[in-house]
Image (cartoon, helix red, strand yellow):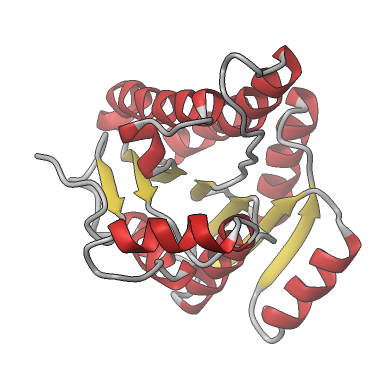
Amino acid sequence: MKRRVAVVSGGIGGLGTAICIDLAQAGCAVVALDLPRAEAVDRFAVATAGLDIGFQPLDVTDTDACSDCVQSIQASHGALDILVNAAGITRDTTLRKMERAQWDAVLEVNLGGVFNLCQPAIEGMVARGFGRIVNISSVNGQTGQFGQANYSAAKAGMHGFTMALAREVARKGVTVNSISPGYCETAMVRAMPDDIRAGIVDKVPVGRLGRPEEIARVVRFLAAEDAGFITGANIPVNGGLYMSF
């Protein structure tokens, strides 16, 4: 079987690192994309030592840089087969207090970054007759969340994008899906005040936060060779926090 090349945006965050490791263990050559924060890059290098995982600095809001990055990876690796869009930020506040810069920043990273990487990557996938795109959305894109009008809008928009692109490329051997994690053991969640985090856990039917490895396992499933009949889907991984048909 051909060795697949996987690219993960937000790759040196807690969730992104878990996804990179899981895909590498599945036999992929992996490239993590993220802002070049020195301490985070060092931790990433330690966590991924011995695996075929590289790092390439990238600001996903820079359209031209994203295009150049995709071209560079395709030139050096021969293909870009799997794209995981996991880059994301929060700028939480109620809408009445939200500044336009807070709205723009979240939309540009969380949703604009998906466009900026998918558009240059999709042509090569279609030409090669194989591609897997997995967009990391959020339970809060399904339910909304107090103080997260920007984040919830971006994450809901991500799945709308997923469904539309899935229809465009479904006959070309390319699948496009999204995953909506619930609250996981990441730096973003650990930064919450203890009482708020405890209140969230109380509402989760399984009684705990998710582990990044549990999200990564679903990414691997959707990226697999034999997952070609799943497209335009959203897979909730939230411990039962939100259930629907």
